[in-house]
Image 1 (tube, rainbow, N blue to C red):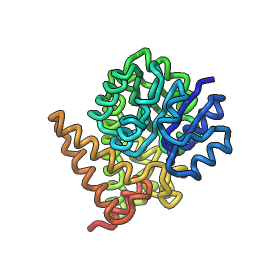
Image 2 (image 1 turned 45 degrees about the vertical axis):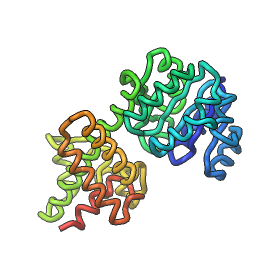
Image 3 (image 1 turned 120 degrees about the vertical axis):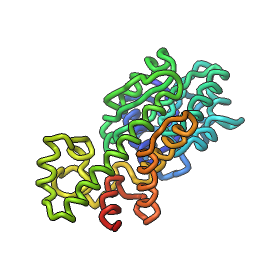
Image 4 (image 1 turned 180 degrees about the horizontal axis):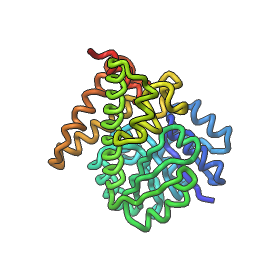
Length: 296
C-alpha cells in the first residue's frame, strides 16, 4: 500500500483516484469541488484541506489539472506541493500541459530533492473509469519504474517516452494527429451525404481500404456504423471539443517554439475553434461532423 495525494478530481481525475482507492492504496484527495471530494471520501479516500497538506503526508503526489498554470499554482509557492512534500517523494503530473512548463517543473522538483514525471493520458473518461488508460511518461527511468505499479492501477499501457517533457510531447503529437484524422473522416461523411452516398456503404468501403483509421473504425463520427461511438449518444463526450482545441493549441505553441512546420495542425485548430465558438465545446470532438455539415 502506498500513501498517495491526488489533486484534481475532474472528469478524468475522479475515476483515476477511485481506481487507486480500489487497488488498496491510501489516497488523500484535494479539489475545489467539495462534492467530488465527498464522493471519493465515501469510496474510501480521505480529504485534504490543501494541496500542500495532502503532499505532506504522501509518498506519491498525483495531479490531474486543466492547464499548466494550474499545475504551477499547485506545485510551486509556499503552500504548494514542492514546499511540503518530503524529500524523495514522487510527483506524477497526469495533466496535459505545455512541454516547457513540464520541463521547468521537473527541474524545480529536482532542486527540492523530489522526483517528477509528466504522464499525460489517452483514453478519455471511459478509459479512466475502466482503468485502461494509456500513459505517455517523461522523466528518469528509475522514477518511471517506481511509478509503474500505480499507473498500472489506472491504465493498461505505460510507455516511457523519454526525458522530462517527453510525455507531453508525445501527447500533443498524438492528439494533433487525432484531430486532423477526425476532421478528414468527418469531411468524407459530409461529402458523402451531399453526394447521396449511404453512410454505411462508405464505412464498409473505407474501413476495409486505404481510408481506414481509428477515427473511422472505432470512433466513427456519424450515427450507425459503430454503435459504441459518441455519435450514437448525441455526441456525449468521451473527449470534448474544447479539450481537443486545447491540445491542438498546445501543439501549435510547441511547433512555433521548435520551428516545426505543422500546417494541417494549424488548420485543425481553426476548425475546432469554430466548433467551440458555435457553442459545441462541451460535445465530443467527433461532433465536428455536425459543424462541418452545417458549414456551406
